[in-house]
Length: 169
Image (cartoon, rainbow, N blue to C red; front, side):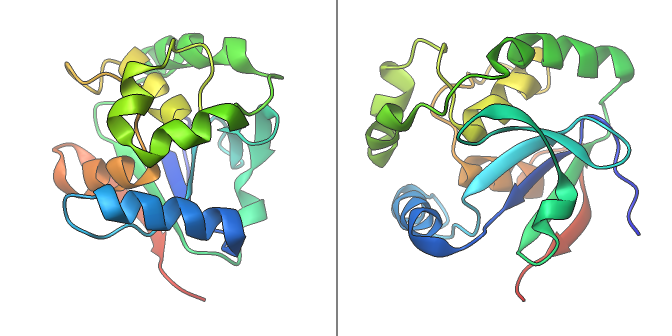
């Protein structure tokens, strides 16, 4: 059993039509022409409790992803204080509906960044806004981020460590 901590982030792909569409679009725009994940979330509890933007933004559990590709990563600079600062940026969205109307903007990523007020977040923007609030994105803005951007960050930025990675079932 792996040990997750508050502040860990995860990416996953449940398959299905929507997931496959997200992956195809992000793969097209990806700098490395590789995209594997269609969903992102934040670990908020040691028991695998998560905070995610699904149809309703709220708390769920990692156990729901036991039979799908997943990567869980940790930033070595994460502290309890940074975690609280990051959660302050996203907790106000709890209970809100997923902004389905924003998905077309993500077909052309510059539109997603430009035409976002930051008031309606897709799953990967929720994670990136959390990391921005933790001061772990540097000068990067959180708007327009995709699961592929987060995957590239995990694999290429300093201070990131993979806790678990399951590629295929």
